Length: 229
Ligand code: CA
Image 1 (cartoon, protein in one colour):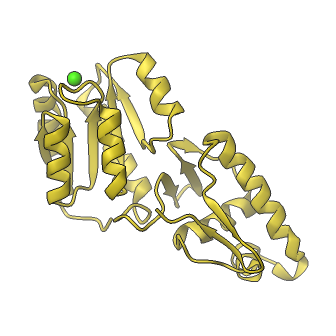
Image 2 (tube, rainbow, N blue to C red; image 1 turned 135 degrees about the vertical axis):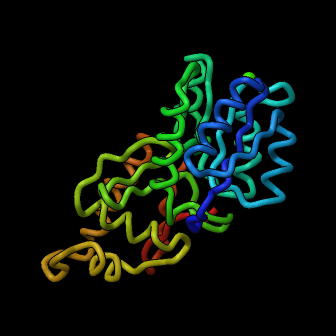
């Protein structure tokens, strides 16, 4: 999502005192807060206008934050920070493949939340966008770190480079040669199947984080691409 001057942050929270604190903190930090007290209101608002990030309470009066997240993910790839009051919910956030970017446990300080909002926006910059791109990814280029489904991946240098290439153009099929040239500093020294070996270890690391996702697609005789959503 292109960086707006005052990015709109959608806050979905039914408790007014908490919402007001968040609204105030985000406005002070230069964001444009948009508060909705129910899941349905939030989904309607997100469908009407572009939102840079969603702060999403799990315990809402009309539907759960998990359902709101699922609905949002159907149509867009907006970063989401969950607000949770129970540690059991944290397990679900981490365990389910909701593509949550972060979570903050209640009670939290407004300063803590705005710091998380900034961090997630920084991380997702260039990766999130309208539907049709890859979702669930975060890419911190300054630190050479890639996360998937809210979890950081422990990657070797070549795995990181390889995945960065795929991540930059979701849906595009890259030949082994293209991937090797992009990811290896000395491609002449590497064999063709080295790419296959690295894709295999990458897949294993992604499976450890999200067993069902399988985001790297094999195109027989052609090469690989990152699954588009
Ligand atoms: Ca609540």
